[in-house]
Length: 309
Image 1 (cartoon, rainbow, N blue to C red):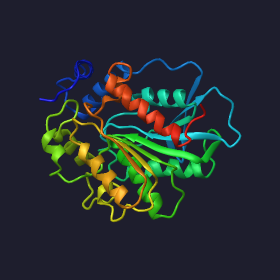
Image 2 (image 1 turned 120 degrees about the horizontal axis):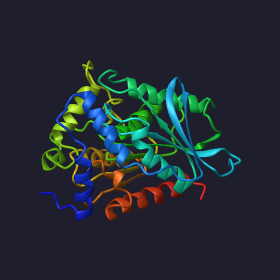
Image 3 (image 1 turned 45 degrees about the vertical axis):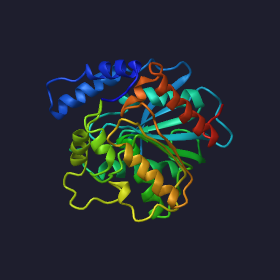
Image 4 (image 1 turned 45 degrees about the horizontal axis):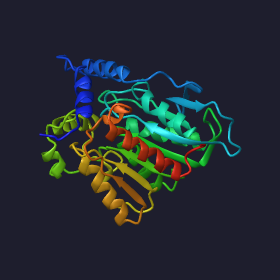
């Protein structure tokens, strides 16, 4: 039904091999962690990785071996995916390794609290706390606050977008850019991609509904900080790169967000992700169309000055 390449089909099969009959939350988390571990490459030589806390929230920093730049490190603040309910710092080492090594920048990943034990606004508040700690100069390394961007995939893309909205609304310092990779942004249930990609590989429409319900449990009236497409205004937000996947029920969330940002005068690039599926970032080096996504992502970040090379 979905015309994907043989290489991507092989990646999907390997990923799905980690599913089990245990559909409990603990089982889902355990299987997700095992799957992530199988796709995590060795730590690149010359990259110092360490864990600490910022604003009372656990973070992991990925620091290149290069000398500290005079103005401080360009920095990417990374928010991991996993439907707000699974995932950890370990689950997204793979992309943080890649970004820190390829760009020779500091990457800081946030270990935000997970739903349903900690539903909205816990994860959002954790990301804000880390941002504010960095702004206050509490980071583990010297950071150039003019070259500080936010980036996230899936639920992490939601958190990155929500953080930008909240900072704008409160008149606080904004990231230099926001990079949202197949983000879930709370789009309406009748978006075409919900129907067209209802049973897409690695993420179905039912999955998206389930994860959102866990995240919003106990929330009677979701705000734009939970579902960014609910925002009243999209003006004054940081420039954006939004990358979507063609065969993903969340595809139209990203496309609609890009449309609204552009209409509000925000400089926005949309990467259409032809032939891609949700969760494909782990297929780096295995699937040519995923490598093209990475090439574009790295090109964009370099063009925004988020690089030392």
